[in-house]
Length: 114
Image (tube, rainbow, N blue to C red; front, top):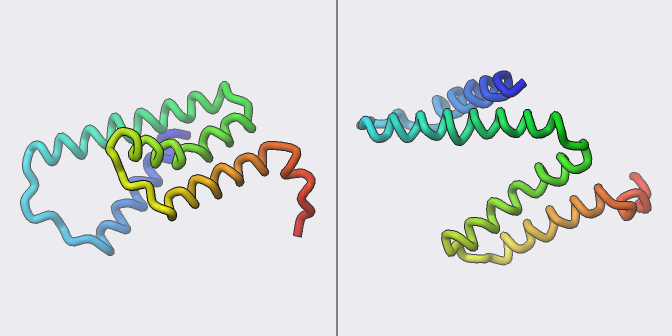
């Protein structure tokens, strides 16, 4: 499953990059190593570990963890890299967190469906 996800992401990225981006003019050895590191460690390894972890995690817990990934990523950038905390970022936190709470608690079952 992880290999299929990785291949699909790579194919989509190559197609979109060829349509919307200019080819790089000067590629150096450190550039190639950076891309390889990002590809192998940051993408393939993390995706493989995520799929492995999901196998042993109840679906509701996995949904909460995956939904809050963007919240923790943005929060980490604010704490570690001193990113500016904007109203838009706070609104995104609040909406994502509220959506998780509503979908994973009894509160979500009390709201009538449309």
